[in-house]
Image (cartoon, rainbow, N blue to C red; front, side, top):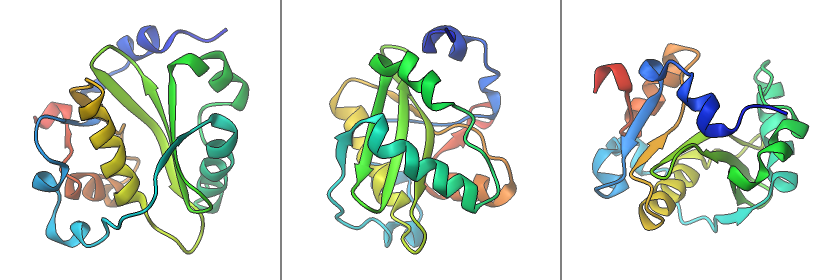
Length: 159
């Protein structure tokens, strides 16, 4: 069995993770250019079965693999929170402490790009459910890092 999320997370170098507290409205930290992508999609809590294929397809399209195996996600199922815009986008998040939610992965189906909307929904869900920190992970390249900054997130080492 893999480590429990809190044990795994405690061993990570979080200095490169992009984080944001949930104490103010999401829009306050988002760049004007990204705000126009906050559309009113019907985001719902879902399960791994619905979200995992979207994440895997999105990563494959970009030439990358998703680091969590399907079986490993089921080993920590009670700690996962999955968000879905049906037939469009998904996010798999992991509760890593009583106050922090880690977004393990998000992605969208080709031709659609509602990631800003799903991020806003997760952020609002965090705030409504007592999570004061939303962690959207590291950025593998500068384009992704800039996108995360435009969403109002900062690397922990820069905060």
